Image (cartoon, rainbow, N blue to C red; front, side, top):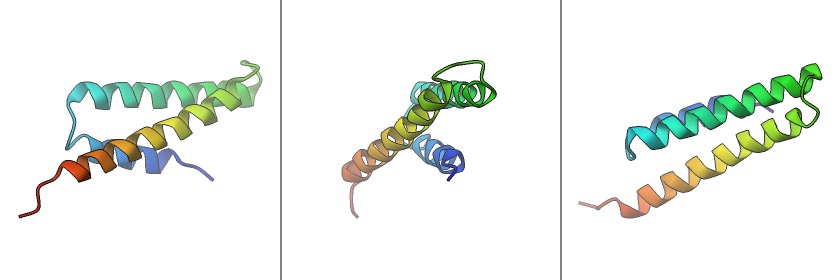
Length: 77
């Protein structure tokens, strides 16, 4: 199952609550993870597939946690 579209959607939603630098770092880590994954599939990087999948899962977990923390801090009117 491919998690990249969900990661991109979560990064987009995170951009409403956090500054540019958080979004930039998350996006760069996701890009690096996908490049590692592709290199691992092609056989150029020995552990690339594992590192790429782990990086994508890590981005998914981090963005989810960031949104939960942002939701806790919202004021109810």
